[in-house]
Amino acid sequence: MSDLATARKILKQVFGFDDFRPGQGEIVAAVLSGDPVLAVMPTGSGKSLCYQLPALMSDGLTLVVSPLIALMRDQVGQMRALGLCAATLNSQSSEEEAGETWRQIRDGSLKLLFVSPERLAMDGLTEALSRGKIARIAVDEAHCICEWGHDFRPEYRLIRQSVEKLGAIQAIAFTATADAAMRAEIAERLFDRAPKIFLHSFDRPNISLAFAAKDQPRKQLQRFLAARRGQSGIVYCASRAGTERLAEFFGEQGFDTLCYHAGIEQGRRNANQDRFLREDGVVAFATIAFGMGVNKPDVRFVAHADMPSSIESYYQEIGRAGRDGLPAAAYTLYGLDDMALRRRQIDEKDLSDERRRFEHQRFSALASLCEAVACRRQLLLAHFNEKSEPCGACDFCRGEIKTRDGTIEAQKALAAVYRTGQRFGQAYLSDLLMGADSEALRRNQHDQLKTFGVGADRSKAEWASTFRQLFAVGALRAASAEHGGFALTEKGDAILRGRETFILRADPPREKSAGKWSRKPAREIDEFASGDGKVFEALRKLRRELAKDEGIAAFMVFADRTLLEMAERRPATLDDLRGIHGVGERKLALYGDAFLEAIAQASE
Ligand code: ADP
Ligand code: ZN
Image (tube, rainbow, N blue to C red; front, side):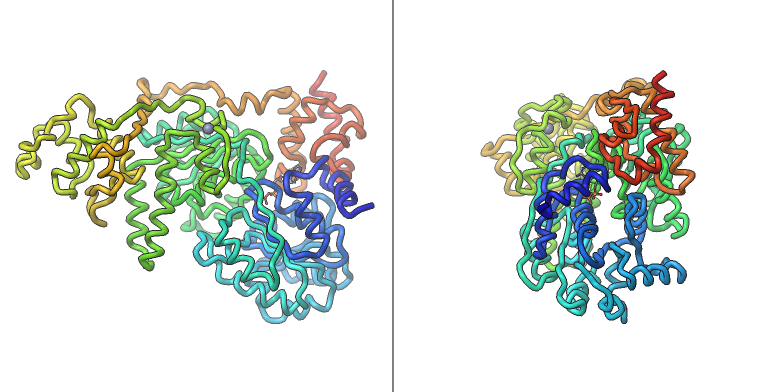
């Protein structure tokens, strides 16, 4: 039997999957052939399987370098749930655990060992390991090696030395974010010869994308969450205080909430993360400190209460939703304040001019995605150099964004900036356009300008939105670091002089009656719950009980998708059950009877 055919058999027997996901088959084959491999695949595409499966098929140990202890613990838990011999060595392992792990390394029974880059570089580890048989080293989150990346971890630079000390074993690396320059950097710093590179689409068609300008942000968020009650999700906030305020507010609204940021004491922080991973239906309000360790397949939504810092971070953060491939939602709120804050942060960092320009560009890309008047997914993928058709599922494609030609309004706004000397902010300029009775305007004699009052037909909110959109598309820039003043860019000049047009998007109308939220579940849940609701709920309950008994996360018993398939197909025998997604031999033996009984009971 060929390696790949054997791999397929194990895929079904051990993992319970009928088929490889796109890209996995080729990568597994390359790994088994012994070549160095660099695979760039989006979050949730199943990177881990590409080293787990070969690890089972190879003689010797697969060493996995992973940046976070929480992530490792989780993976070890999942491997053990499948009946595989896996362990981690880290600062939190007890002496007893470590002793057992070393015994397994010596007798060759350990298949996967997870270590952090720091641990790997520590004195003596490679020496001790090289006494056993090491099949290969797999480096997870390999982009952490890149200096200009958003997750730079200097310890990653030490991995290469360890590989050499281990006798130039096969190295394989995985990441979800790496553009061409980063791929070159990873290839150079991690490998001793050119790796085979695999690139997989960044498309995550199951995540629907939506953005909204902040109007009444708490209400906007409430509307989004109310449609998703009972689901697990993450709400990212820019500040620690923000996470606490919102967690409390939504807790009072009856949501099962928790809070996570770097200011919370370590023990409680870990406990919170654990609770999020294990329990169903918890909403985490978090700063970006809540991230890489969140390897939970059934996160149904990711919302941004404040604007993320770049498209790359946005993509990574929303990527934590819908890893199981079922429908999930991403919702991002943004405002002029967010944009100004992010720009200021970039200006205040100690950076070279070149690097600063790069960071500003990176942020601009996100700002224009927020204000875009085109398919969000198409733009997002274009950012990663992928061509695609309009998705049909984002807010733009669903027709939720109204647009029209706004060149005239833009010209009025830009003229106001220009004629007042390019130093005033949005509030002042809106007053000018509306012809407001204002002491400040009179003092500067701006009530004498031709632009005074030319925009009296629109509201202040409309003008604010126009300025924000001009800023987002790069027609305006900040005049100085401290004040909120605007100056024209080249693009702004082109619009003002009629060489370019400007498409204006209407902000969503305000909610008229506060407090009356639609209870209609969100679209993606309708699809999600299309199976038999009663059976599905019964299975979820059983899963929760089993997970609690064993002290593991619910999804480690079975994934949502597995339960949905059971609810739909109603297997009656162990053999029927074997045919269902995610049911491998070990889980069949452990849980099969209990689930068959629950299905039979709930179907009566
Ligand atoms: P990544 O590391 O790329 O973010 P994971 O390795 O965590 O993604 O995989 C995401 C989810 O996909 C996991 O729940 C995993 O069990 C599941 N998965 C992986 N490979 C397959 C497959 N071939 N078929 C079905 N599900 C899979
Ligand atoms: Zn779309």
